[in-house]
Each structure stands twice: as C-alpha cells, then as structure tokens.
Image (cartoon, rainbow, N blue to C red; front, side, top):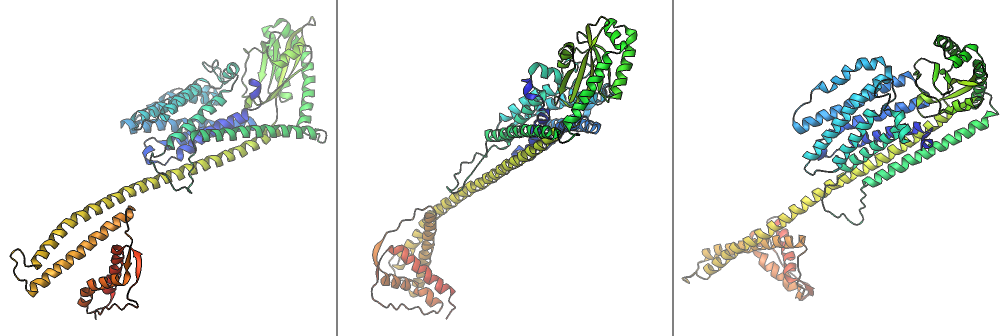
Length: 604
C-alpha cells in the first residue's frame, strides 16, 4: 500500500487541510437560532486555521523546508488549538453557567523550556501533545454535554463527539519524529511504517466526517408537513449527497493532479535533449559528479582504516573528511556505514537531524553498494525533509573485502512537476469551494422555505379560527334577532291584549322590523362569506322572472331612497325576463347594488 502514497504527500496535506476548511465554512454558515447554543463560530475558526496549518505543510513539500513557513505554521497551529479550547470554555459556560479559568493553558507554559531545547520541531510537538490533545478532547466532551442537554437529543452530536475523541488520540500520540520520548517511538514515520497509510490521510478522513456530521446536524428540517404547489421544485441535499460530491471532487482532483504530474514528466523528458539546463540534465550531471566523488572518498586511507578497525581516535578525522566533501559539493549529509548498516560516522547540514543509532541495512542504496557498484535512491514526496537523493559506493578494507559503504545525500531543487501539481491542487480547491457554496445556498433556501411554510401553517390556523368565529357568532346572533322580530310582529297586531296600534307606535315598530331585517341580512352575508371561503356555498337554480325580482328589490328599498329624497323608478323594456338562477342570491346581489347606489348618491 505504501507505493500508492509515494509522491502524493502534497495532495494528502491538501486534502487534510481542505477537510478542516470545509468544517470551518459549514460552522460559519449555521444561522438557525435554535442551534446557536453551541459556539459554532469558534469551532469554525478552529477548522479554518487548522486547515491553513496543513496547507503550510503542503507548501513546504513544494518549496522545501522554508523557515518562514515553519514559524508561520507554528503560530497558526497554536492558534487553531487555542480556538478549540475557547470553544470548550464558552460551551461549558453555556451549559453549566460556570467559567473555566485560564489554568488550562498552564501545562503548555511549563513545557516551554523543553520545546525551546529542540527548536521549531520541539515547539510543534509540545503544542500537539498538550494544546492539541486537551483542546480536541475537551471540545468533544462539551459536544457530548450539548447532546445530553439538547431537547431533541440529536445523535449527530454523539457521532461528532466520538470522531473528535479519535482525532484527539491521533493528534496527540502520532507526532513528527523527535529525539525524545515518546516522539522517538510513536510518530508519523512509525505509524506509516506499521499501517502502510499516512496518518495525515487518516486525520483528513476524520475531519471530513466531522464536517459532514455538522452539516447534517445543522440542516435538520423543521418538521412542518406542507406540500408546495406541483410546479414548485424543492431540493434538500442529504448528508450522503454532500459526502459523495466532496469525495468525487477530491478523487477527481487527485487524478487530475497525477495526470499533470505525468504530463510534466513527459515534457521534461522531451525538453532534455533541447535544453542543457533542464532539470533532468542537471540531475544527471550531479549524479555523475557525486558518483565519482563517492568513489574517490572510498579510497581515502582514513575512511578505509575506519571500516577496518573502527578505532575511536580515527572517527573525528573521518568526520572532517566527510564534512569537507559535504560542504564542497553542497550536500545535505555524508555518512560512513559498516557492513551491517550501522553508522560509523556522519555529518549533516545545519537543521538536519543526526541519526547515528539508525540502521540503514534495508535502504536500497546501501544494498546496491554492497553489490560492488554505485547505488542510487530518490526519495520524493514522503515528506518535505526527504525530498532528496542518495549516492553510495562500497568501501573496502585493507584486505580488499567490502567492509562498509560511503554515502552522500543531496537535496533536489524545486521541481517543475511539483509546481504543476500545485496548480491542480489550487483548481481542485476552487471547485470544492464552489460546490460547498452551492450546497450552503441550497440549505439556506430550504431554511427560508421552512420559515415560509411555518408562516403559511400559522395563517391557515388563524384563518380557520376566524371562519369558526364567524360561523359561531352568526348563528348566535340569529336567535336574539328572531326573538326581537317576533315580539315586534306581535306588537304590530295589537299585542296580547289585541288593542289598536296608533300611527306613531306603528312607525316605531316598522323601524324595529326594518332594522331587524337589515341585521338579519348582515348575518346572512357573514355566513355566506364563511361558506364561500370554506367552499361550502350551495346554489339552488330555478327559472325565475328577473323583472319581478328587480321590482321586488326596488319595492323593499324604496323607503331608504325616500329618506334621502331620491326618486327611484323601475321601467323595464319588457314585461318578463326568465333565467335559470338562484333567486335568493340574485336578489341579494341586486339589493347590494341598489343600496350602494342610494348610499353614494347625494341627497335630493
């Protein structure tokens, strides 16, 4: 499996950083008020800064181990874990109402001297051991507490907490190799050697799972049951569609990157004959020169004596020789190994680790040299400080037997191939950004539609309450109106005593009857409105004389016209005009038209 990842570490770091960047963007896109108890913005800051840290690692693969990148990466890495610790502190306050003191940062302060002793690598490892582990672990526990206190108890938070615990373990335990415990035993190299998979890839996969889980939790629908019109298309992307899209884009970007890698290699080979200064020609010249240098070094008496008797007093002289050749040919390191692959003497450039206790018997260039000729090995892309090549040659003792191996290691200058790969990575990044913006836009659209649906549902409820109110009130009003009309009718007939009714009393009673009828008509209108809105109106069609119907309406409304001194006449062109209508509703239409005419016609 290791062969699959050789030369792919630039893209692995890109994927690692992209996964955290997506997590940060998704956290910043959460705008549902009910989810704001969790401090998503701080988690988003952690995701974006942590992703930026991994991209700085990627740039060091492309451009070499630049000190500026290393220092900047150190600060960005520390900032990312600080954001995560602040996420845990704010979350704890929102759950418990208590504030965690800044004592959580004390361990890192106590270990600053240790970090200072081992330089930038020591600082980075210390940050991962203490800030990284404590930040991720505390954040995972806060996420789980939010699950316990959430009314809905979304299991997405349980999965998010579990993935963060796993990430905490891989962040704190598997660190870059360093000459102190436990980094000298449990580190990225040992993980790669034992599992056959880079730990950065595993972390990236975990980060991508975290991003998808946060997306799924924040995109939970409102639960309102509402069917929009048939022509209205809704599209709510699921967590599986999001995951599939991102995986397709990342896989496609990886294939495109390797295609450009192949394309750049072909171009370099084609230009080799035409250009004397092509990267391949320069490399061939360097290999030819270093091959001769290792041959000449193997014949130096001090070196030959060192592999014969390994006397301690000669080791310093050997190192002087190795250092002279290293400096003269601008090599990274030079080593003298015995026949078993153990280091007899070694010198390295400033900033390069010395590994005198390391066994080199399994290295291809060592095995080739033991065969009696120059050995060559190219180490490309495993990590930034291994983007180099090795040249070796056997060293014979005074008896003429191969007793050791001399090696020179030199850095390969920034290859155009890696720049081609970086171009593909940038293109993949922008495509992934467009995809996530598209999905976030869709999610916000669906959130808006949920809000519209909620408002629509509430309006339907209010409208039904209004209709029920109208229906109840209308029926309740009919009863007293009927009682009033019946009483007025009895009084018009002389009452119970059957006494004669004078003209003034009759006029007053007629006014009562007229207003009762008018009020009854208004009640009927209310009932009709309610029935129309509920689509319950019924019509009774009959063959009716329209002329007689109009005459009836005018006769009943004549008193209103006379009260305003308005002359109202009905002069039909024909005596009869029959039509199939509902006479009651048609009469009401005519009444309404004439009442409006009387109302808006000036007096006289």
